[in-house]
Amino acid sequence: MSLGQEAAELDARDPLASKRAEFDLDPQVAYLDGNSLGAPPRSVARRLEEVVREQWARRLIRSWDEGWWDAPERIGDRIAPLVGSAPGQVVVGDSTSVNLFKLLVAATRLNPGRQEILVDGTTFPTDGYVADSAARLTGHVVRRVAPGEMPGAVSERTAFALVNHVDYRTGELHDLTGITEALHAAGALAVWDLCHSVGAVPVELDAAGVDLAVGCTYKFLNGGPGAPAFSYVPARWQEAFDQPLTGWAGHADPFAMDEGYAGRAGISRARAGTPDILSMLALDAALDVWGDVTVGQVRAKALALGEFFLRCLDELVPGVEVLTPRAPARRGNQVSVRWPGAREALAMLTAQDVICDFRQPEVLRFGLAALYTRYGDVLRAARVLSGWPG
Ligand SMILES: *Cc1c(COP(=O)(O)O)cnc(C)c1O
Image (cartoon, rainbow, N blue to C red; front, side, top):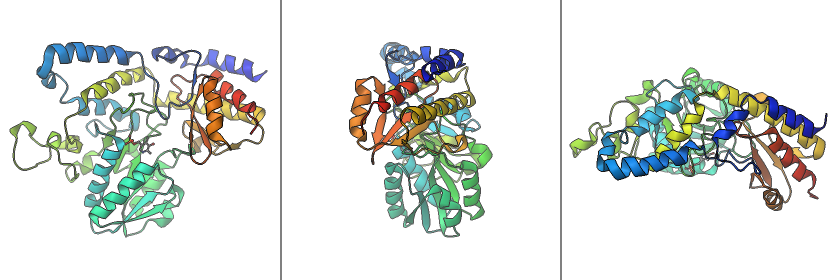
């Protein structure tokens, strides 16, 4: 059977094929960048129109008491099952970078008397930048260590380690449970960044005993450009959780207008200022696509898409250097290849309606957002690459 026939058959038999119709996507486009900006679910435009025309225009200020003020916790509870969290431990708001700052400073306060912070040596840069600044403020020293080497590097000096669950560049999936265990064995806390795993890979935060986590909602959760991020603080840490952005929205009684800060009980003390309601309610609508599908189903299809894509690459682009681990247990929902002249290759892919992206140095990334990506899409990407002289 030819690859083309195989792709057609896989798409015809795909149990998630009908989910694609819930997204506003041009059928001509092979969209392989859902790991950077998820595609828009059709429900989002309708919901935003309603929020502006009904809630904002007609209900005006009353809307704050009719669902807006509590949206961060309510939507956090919708994300909780996607990351293996009980209710009341996830709150939505602010960017990932801002949430990292809150959580990293709080982590130093949860584990005092230790001088060192380990940061994933392959991290997405913002995490490292924020960790460096948090360390300067709190008097800690940052050491950069590859995730696989953290179990050997952690010691009684380590307050916590910050690890990316999936490497943004290579798509490698790290062992969240094993690394968390190793950190705990040395008395260090485990802080995980789920930006590239939430909505893509099953995550079990409670079961793994993760201490704190952040994640992004505009990638595999399709929340829209700049959609607010989330923070996870498990119940056992909430009372001691002391984050540095002590804005009024995290106050025990915000409308008492007290002079002094007292954090509200529960996850709400991870909040800072007035929530970004339009973005947040766009995300709320986007989460509707998870009503009849599990992360497990999405993961199963993404692994099959990856398997098929790797086969297409091997056949059509022999000798291509794949940076993503081939073992299913070690890759997230992304395939990355080293490609000399990646920037030019990207322009050629884009000209043929294959949308992906590239990262320094010379890496092409193909996101496999299984809710809407077709087997035919990854075959097209491999076909375009096969025509590239480089
Ligand atoms: C996408 C991503 C971010 C993004 O941070 P923003 O504050 O939303 O810009 C941070 N960390 C990781 C690991 C990411 O993949």
